[in-house]
Length: 80
Image (cartoon, rainbow, N blue to C red; front, side, top):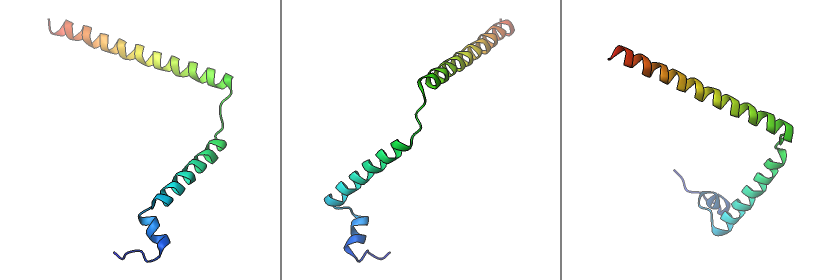
C-alpha cells in the first residue's frame, strides 16, 4: 500500500487536532440539517399510535401468558 503524498491526503488518513475539530463541526451541522428534514407527528397522531402500540403489546403479553399457562396445565395433566 502506498502512503499518501499530499498534506490533505495525510489529514484524511490521520486527522490532526484541527481536522478533528472540523470533523466535529461538520458532523454537528450535518446532524442539524438532517433533523430539519424530519417530519414530526402531530399530537393526535402521536397519541393514537402510542395507544395502538400499548394495546398490541398488552395483547401479545396476554396471548403469550395464555399459551404458557395452557402448556403448564397440559404438562401437569400428562406427567402426574
